[in-house]
Amino acid sequence: MGIIQEFFAKIGDAIDAFLGKFTDSVVIKSMIKVGAVFLLIIVIIIMFASCGRKKTYKPEEFLTRMVAMTKAKRKYKAEDKNNELPKNDKDVVVVPLESFVEDKTIKDLDTVIDSSSTCTGEIKIINNNGYYLFIPKLDCGDVYKTTTLYDTLVKDENIVTEGNGLYSMGDDYVFRGDSVNNFLKIGDTLYRIIRVNGDGTIRAIDTTKRTTTVWDNRYNIEKKSNNGINNYYANGINSRVKDYIENLYDNVFTEDVKPYFTTHEICIGKRSVNDDIFDTSIECSEKIDNYPLSLVYPYEYYLVSLDQNCTGYRNVSCVNYNYFNTLGSIWTITADKDTTYYVYRIDSSGADLVKGSLRTQAKVVVHLNGELIVEKGIGSEEDPYIIKTFTSTKKR
Image (cartoon, rainbow, N blue to C red; front, side, top):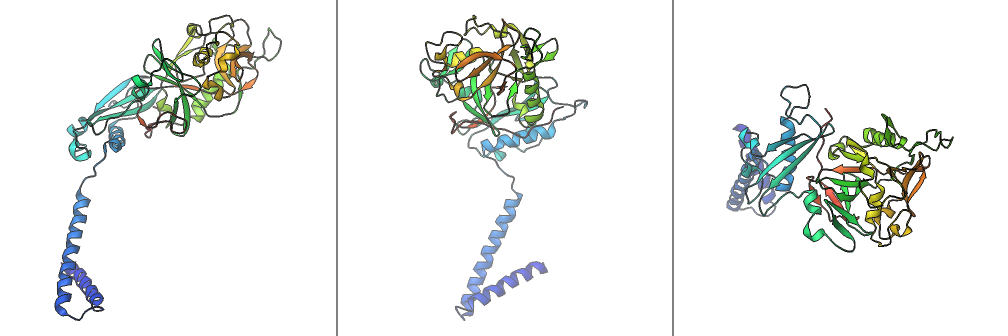
């Protein structure tokens, strides 16, 4: 109590000294001192009350809190008997938001989430090739609702039947044309969305400019030179470009990014120049299952063009109205069926067969879960779709 009295006494002396410059009236000084001390007491009470009050979050801010609470309760060692994480690739664990109230992690949702509506939600934990992706969902009625990448893209108003845009093609939705809002950003990396797959995953190409690589430069007995062997993967042996892609995944893409790549089947069948350029089954005559990264297929390049004269291999009209021409010269994953050393490359003149021993960029294609949250953006290059990211959890 003595300390408090001393504190207010010093406050009173300071007020006396200040007021002495303006008046000698004892009554006036006393009235002002009483008022000032009263206001000070009120301020102190408010400060203490604020310190005791729990933080509230806006709905969009609470997503990060949801992930943090979920991680705090999970076990990250596979050998832990109480491991509550999805154990195998593509396994999913769903955590209801209400469970945090039940186990008293939070008192109740209404006092934590700053919303005029009652909020419900859940967190999905998805095992993506051993990395854990956390996707929080929150529904606060008209106030806020998380927006998924799939729902953002596949809206009725986004689907077109002519001109640049997103086309419904069989089970897929394909971006076609040369001026399309298909830009997406995860972290610092900019992608262009190629298509929405029928299974709800999103196929997108990394636009990052990296060092060039050969497709393959091994000795070819048919040509008696190092023109390469055009098997992307055969008999347990990788092509050089597959080695390059795996190195990117292991050493370039960070552990904060890898959880966002879902594994998917990769088509590695070979194509002949006489095959139908729009036949998607040719490349998929041979597949690798559950693989994290890929390259583009020749048919994807052809499908993008809106030129009606784009009807066959080496048809220069295919470069028209085709956003792939902004990506530079890039390898496809597809080799020539009729030789042992030619592979398909896309450049300013179209999709053409070249020797695998040439050096070209290998822009990787990733598959993304359609339930990823879009934080903002309209898909343009200046304002791409921004995927909301959270600090990742390391591989098991």
